Image 1 (cartoon, one colour):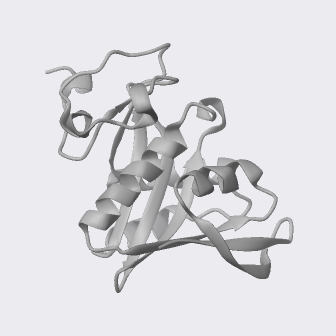
Image 2 (cartoon, one colour; image 1 turned 30 degrees about the vertical axis):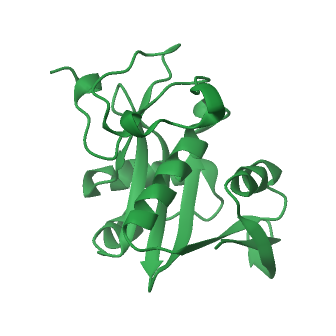
Image 3 (cartoon, helix red, strand yellow; image 1 turned 90 degrees about the horizontal axis):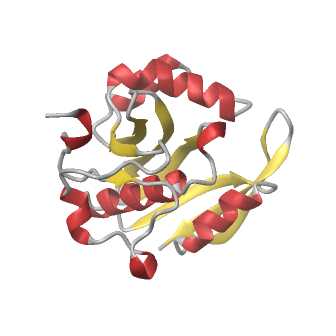
Length: 186
């Protein structure tokens, strides 16, 4: 079976710029068996594995001024309360990553990152949609995250999913020093 047809429960194919009528992914797409590539930007959302740790750390170095290390990913992926997803391209490279840690029913979302060449293709949106879905299935009833105050695109994305600002952490980020907005989806 070709790689594009090897789909696991809870995964779906991402197609750049293609959303079904109504803007929602239909329930049956989560268990689809095939999908056509659109302009070579097809990605598969899947659970991250320890084998992805090096690539995830490399992606973080590209996206963040204070990236997680490969060892940090390995430790987190071993935590039974952690759910980390990867957007994998047909060639096996990672286009994006995101994760959530379940802390007594509250989900702390971190590491939402998409490689520069794949931004503005709804990859972060679809990863976040799947992360929230799987998080709810695993008993998470509220989600929180921090985002740079100046990252307007990310703030808009989170607001689209119903996150609202409930606080601010002064000088939370370094390189450069900047406040973090604390967002919640309850």
